[in-house]
Length: 240
Image 1: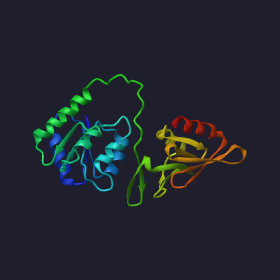
Image 2: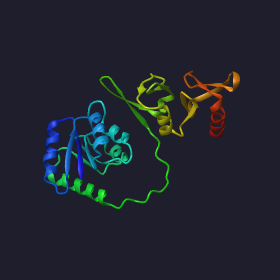
Image 3: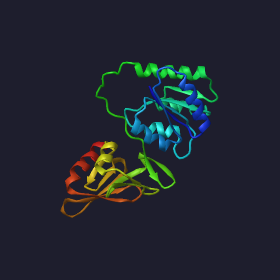
Image 4: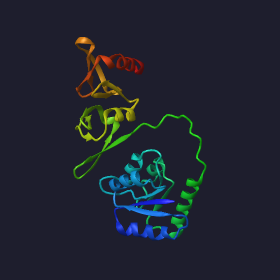
C-alpha cells in the first residue's frame, strides 16, 4: 500500500510517518505540506490512500477531497476538528481520526484501508458520472475555488479558458472542448469559442445570417453561432 500524508504541520506528519512505519503492508510513505502540493503528488504518484488534515491554508482537506479526479485514492481524515465529520464522510472518507490519536486508533484506520483496497472491484455499471461541483484555479499567492454554479459562461483564450462569473473572470489552463465535456450537460457549446450554462440563459436575441446572442443572468451577452443555434434552442425548450 502506498500512502500520502497531507498536513501543514511537520510534527503531525512526523507522527503519522513514525506510526505508519510500524504497520505491515505499507510499501511507501510520502508527504505533502498543503493541498496544492498534494494534488501534484497524487497526480504524479497515484497513492492508494491519503491521510488528510482538514484545516490547511489555501485549500482545505474537504476541498481537496472533493476535487480529486477518478479513480481517487482512499481518504482518511486526520484532524483536530470534529465538526467536519459529516462533510468528510459525504466526500467518501474511509475513516475520521481526531487528534490526538494513539497507535491503536491509527491501526484500526489502516485496517479499514486494507479491507477497502482488498475488496473485489465491482463491475462498472454504466452510471452517469457525478457532475463537477467546483474548479480549482491557480493564482499568484494561492488557489481559488470556483463553484460551477457561479459560472455563467466559459470562453477560450489561447491555452486558457475564461470562467465568467458575476464576481470576476479567472483563467483556467484547460481547453474549451475539454472543460465543456467535463461540465456537460449543465453547459452547452454555443460558439467555437464559448459554452454557456443552460440555467443562466434568460433571453435569445436573433441576429443576421442565423446567428444570435444569449442574454444571461446579470446581463452578459454571449455569441451563439448558427452552427449551434438549433441545438441550443432545443435544449432550452426541453428544459422548460
